[in-house]
Amino acid sequence: MPIRARYVHTNLVARDWRALAAFYMDVFGCVALPPERDYRGAELDAGTGLRGAHLTGVHLRLPGGGEAGPTLEIFRYDDLVESDIPRVNRPGFGHIAFEVDDVAAARQAVMAAGGGVVGEVVSLRTATGRLVTWCYVTDPEGNILELQA
Image 1 (tube, helix red, strand yellow):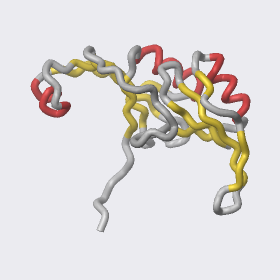
Image 2: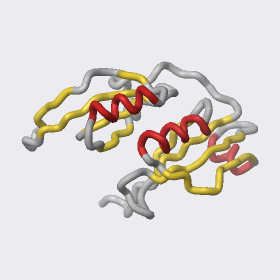
Image 3: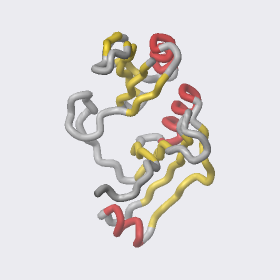
Image 4: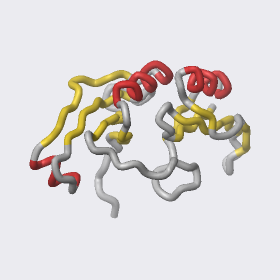
């Protein structure tokens, strides 16, 4: 039997959390939920398994979920560890999806705000028979996003 649960947030670790948060607010209409976060100390070290951890950042209310909806948590650690470039077929978390009215226009907005392109805009019929138009793009730090209508 599953435990009782509610989806709360997705975390992105950013190189520049302020710039990345501005991208999500400007392009997708996310709203910052004060206060800004600034955490350090023994509890953070114990919870992260890191020594001397310090992070700063913000939670953004995602569009469409209402006041109690999930947030996008954008944090920056003082000590960042670089990893491979995100790929759509890499095991683990793949992308964040946003439903939009016009995929091509949203793709252009992402690009104009410093994001990048992964693939083309395509339409396909789902297993339920619904026609979905979608594409993959990246935010300015290379995190993969899906835009769909």
